[in-house]
Image (cartoon, rainbow, N blue to C red):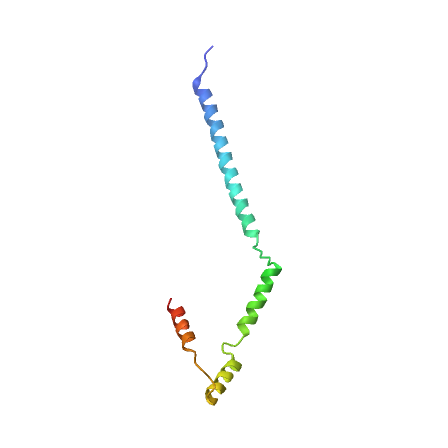
Length: 100
């Protein structure tokens, strides 16, 4: 009995090609379905109550005036009346703190 290697090799090759083609199609289908599922997903942010509280305080601080007019008026009146005394040591410490 003679076994023809050509027939066996052809069948093996055909089987291999079918499997690799099926694998390629399967991989392509998975990547397409993964891409579709990624497109459908939406990002969602859930803020904790603490984050909402921080945001509220940020808004309050943002709405505060940059200059406290009541303090400005108080110092101005002290200067005008001659009651305002400059404390040299505090001025020097303030300058040193800004330089360091």
